[in-house]
Length: 334
Image 1 (cartoon, rainbow, N blue to C red):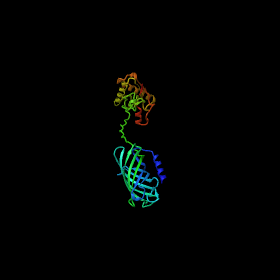
Image 2 (image 1 turned 90 degrees about the vertical axis):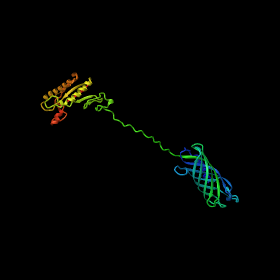
Image 3 (image 1 turned 45 degrees about the vertical axis):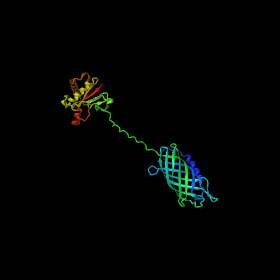
Image 4 (image 1 turned 60 degrees about the horizontal axis):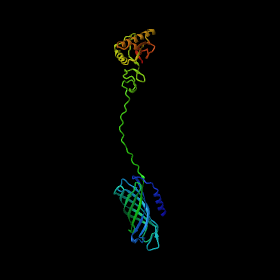
């Protein structure tokens, strides 16, 4: 049993200390015992031992203590040439009463078992009850000194023993602190890049803002092709009044950017001969250019060309397809 004590004390001295928030506390102890006069044992003898405290947070007490104390050397019987070692195991609940940040009082109570190697004169192995009080002085988060008095009452004969103990408490088993949850600010909604003229090029990259609707643009937002949506009647180069608004809109674009030049391209369906359709497309292109001139677009910036029936965009086998092929485009040159 002496080897057990020495081994336990050595292990305790190697324990790493922890912070204030910990699960356990290990306390090597030394002290003494004062026996009642009728036990026939030495009135006073030395003890050593070890206690482990399991800290509690949600119970009416603060710590559950398990430990042992053993006599240092054998204890002599007074009226016989005999001696015995005494080992006591105990389980107690402990309640702390803080005085300040470093100093606390505590009370304890519990049950235990004592073992006599040589049972004699009514000193039999068996259970006991105990209670006591003590003081705990913390020197840092890593170490504290403890002193307590414990009154033991044997279960069989009711004999009494007073124990006094000095200990060095070492906390360990740090409790991980819950992470601090910082509420996240609600992110501002991500707005899509703005494209004011709806030409498919965002404003920050658009070199030609306010592009007319329906126009094809290059990667910097400048017009490359405008479908003027002029559909001529069969064998006609006359622009109907219903297409005037589109021509007016294109004229405004040309006048607002004097660097632009435009080629007016006209087309026909496949009705009539190739030669006739070529001449018809040229007349259609010319009539469109004239309409733009009438709207004060500089004629030097306009050119007309006819492609006849050579570039259909739809079938010429249906009325609808032919109507689509009778068209005019404006191709922009910078």
